Image (cartoon, rainbow, N blue to C red; front, side, top):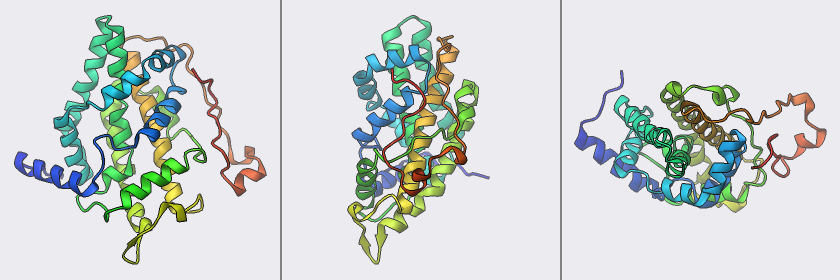
Length: 275
């Protein structure tokens, strides 16, 4: 059984968590966020991708205005590893605001709000935010994000869950909770690999052989898939055009060239045309 915290305790836990993590309101740094948007956009129907591309700056700005009370609720729940029913209800209500705008034919506002919902799956896919109230030693989060940013061109973008792109919006709450579970399972490795012998490990001393690269790669692909899945599920609710949704090619291990096993090399392009 998961016991819900009293309001005052929930606030204290959230405040402590944010203090320990010492991260910006938008967890992923701007460079990574822009990359997430770009890759997620390439998984959605072309019409939606173009609408999002035309408003990318507005989408990012709107995402940074995520309601503080909702962010606090999410941060508190991430400390326990379980999104409470009231938090999931609030996230769903926030998502429905974008759907309502689109149904009212307020296209520009609706698309911006829909795009800004990337904040929900992106944050829930970030293992840093699922570290719990103990957090990490000072400097670990900085080095982790610096490592991810420096290796974006090497991270292979894969579909974390292909079936998620066919998901109905009523399943989003369960899907979002699943992101938290998987993110939390990876959080500990960041702390253990980037803080050793009482000192923070510099990201410059790591490469793609490091377990940190595995965490970064898995969480990045999880976030890309989750962002696209969230957008598509809500886009279907307003009967948006889904006739030109890219179909990524599924590659079996035997299809990979021999040299791919030796080095991840540059980022392989998703099998979908860039909007």
